Length: 480
Image (tube, rainbow, N blue to C red):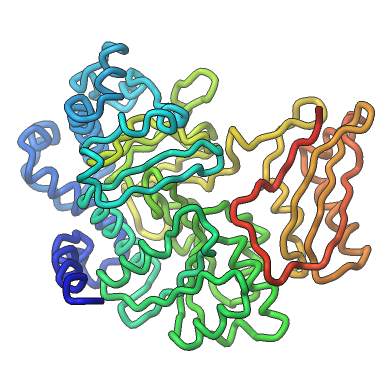
């Protein structure tokens, strides 16, 4: 880093609440949220009056929910004053910040559709575009381009949560994080992660090469013992390198899976190959890389509730569903200055689990890993829904499998699922084991029983050692 960057790093580091987390804290991520709630309480007479306390020693779930609802009201006021989209939206709906006093009151606020953000990105800006420190453009999985703007405070908040999440995963300043995102991504999270590590004083290395053979030298030279990247890319690197290298001898402590769904079958294969835990992280460009992070229990992801309020709704009735029940994930940003998003529909199917967690967190909700997206679901047979993560569990059953794609066609009255699978082995036994595993999936099994889905077909092809495509569609529906 140059002198200017070093000075900026010192200034930002001084602002991070993560620095206030006690060194012996067993749950750094939750403690960071508690610190943020305490700071808000100190600065707000209104919140002190609602909670009935001037200080918060041990933050309870009820007190934290009051903090969240207070921030929703404050964010609504900010949006009315600064974001034209919401000024008009709230007026048309006849809803005011003062109307939101309970969790159920949130349904009074109209939902925000991703297509609106895509078509009217500038109307969501809380500050002028000239004052945005960073702007990202993403299409996610929908194909609709969206522009997301971050203010300086927004970026500091993202770095703050990354610092707390890394602490929560056991990383110290003696460790080195190897960043493994391919350069073909629409936006490069490597820049933000390496920048965050520089500010935090953590060691990092980065290799964005699609040529997987260049990854190993970079990791060895840097002494990397933590890895973060896209699971499909890490899996590809793992499969191709493990033929010649005992990956367990590299001393990797944890692998952090980000930016794509992680199937349990892929997790188990990665853990066996590297000899360490694989931790899942869920995020969106709209809200940041680390919106939710697993702990070592690997049973739900701890959510960044200090910056986001998450709801699960029935996508048909738009009403809240009970805790633990699956529905559509809806998010409100609680402290955004750049792009303001209130009750934003993610189209992810997920569930929220009430605290506590065996890891020691006592007020933070966990997000059950999203099981699919509403806009990436396909129907086969008599209306049975299928999605990529469902097939990941069946296809990644062997370390010989590198990647796959699937086409849905129709022959006569039957739907046909054809899998093209990159694999080291071209043996018929592997193909048949995949056919068997796919046929056992409930939507496929029911379709076959109804005689509306044909037996799945598998074509094995040699792996492409030099090629990799990020976020290509796993499923293509070629039916008329």
